[in-house]
Image (cartoon, rainbow, N blue to C red; front, side, top):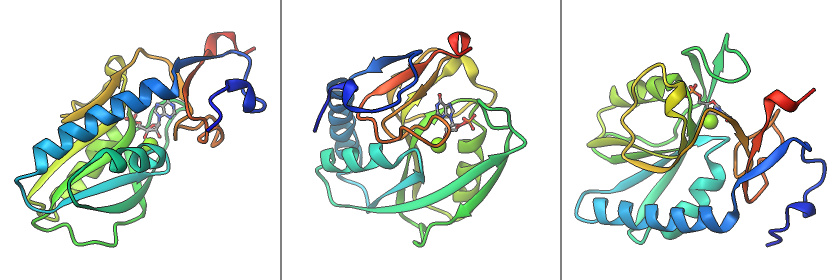
Length: 189
Ligand code: IMP
Ligand code: MG
């Protein structure tokens, strides 16, 4: 894989790299080990990836999980929101095609900002009576939190900045970048 940021075209000039691909890989490896240890002696593990942002994280994470597991996908969107955080008005665009009852469910998400999106997903999935329900999130911005979210496995805690790359989008683009960049809103004139 080409890791040179110059390989990728038209990245905004006000962007800076926050985590290189190697930093992410090292952390994902640790998370994979911790998840394997946690679920080894339990029942079947089901990773529920939240589309679209969680997809790069999921595909790397599952290769670092050494125990057998199943994957599923769910897509949600939030409405009535500003550019940066959701308002809590969340809708399921695509639901899981698996019955999660009595399964050990681990939600795989890209980032937690206000916490509204994951609160909605947690409430929805809880009604389906999984054996356990936890969150694995790559990034968290605690300064932005409006509702408390219990995160079982966390990649990195970050400051209140808008980030993109490695699954996260900037106007739906740049999810393909192998690194995570910060978009400097203050200098985007
Ligand atoms: P929350 O409901 O406010 O926690 O927002 C979570 C969702 O907002 C994430 O799943 C992302 O899709 C999006 N989001 C929040 N912060 C960022 C960011 O810095 N970059 C890209 N997407 C973000
Ligand atoms: Mg998301």
